[in-house]
Length: 256
Image 1 (tube, rainbow, N blue to C red):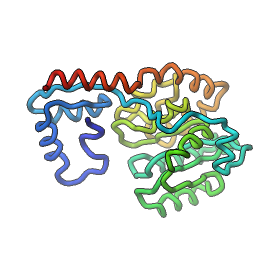
Image 2 (image 1 turned 120 degrees about the vertical axis):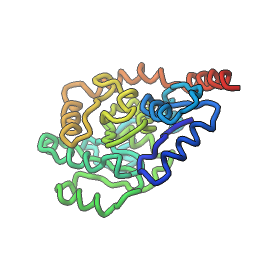
Image 3 (image 1 turned 90 degrees about the vertical axis):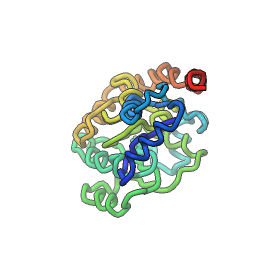
Image 4 (image 1 turned 45 degrees about the vertical axis):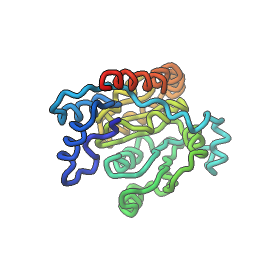
């Protein structure tokens, strides 16, 4: 079961080890077209494979009322919130989101950015970036591991989630968004656009600060957020655990 074939942070030996692994197994499961294409580029033997998207992360409970989530997180109910969620690594593009959030089109709105997750990159670099952009009062850093029991509060308090990735295969964060019907903005890299139909449950934008800022401006127009959240109820039906299990069993029957 392949998450990444080639790691996001490249190291010496990545490609030979990937080639050895792909050609040693009986078959493989990919969860996005981009990962499947990576795997097939190493596959010298034409191994059997299947493609199936990652199911919902439904282990975090149900959505709660926004007021309850806001109170639990100690936030100000007079503001709206955008969420960046997960481990903070350079390829995930938090710097692009910060630049986008500093766009003058967003400064006039009563919106704050929550960054929730542990730093796996230089914390000081991002803090300095926030200060340079004058966002000290508008970025809320919860830079620690978020326990499973608290995940629902972040996704219930947020209007939308932004994944401003510079590179990607797929992301588990999108599947948390679907679980809570929280609209999502993703960049057009890797397999993210496969999971987020543009203009239906969120927006797919270019991996630039301007692209992210454009998407954020558009998502706050009219009833867009409400329409996207409603569409997620139907769209998430294609991400079932039963469907993934059936696909894996199908592959097993081909390789056993």
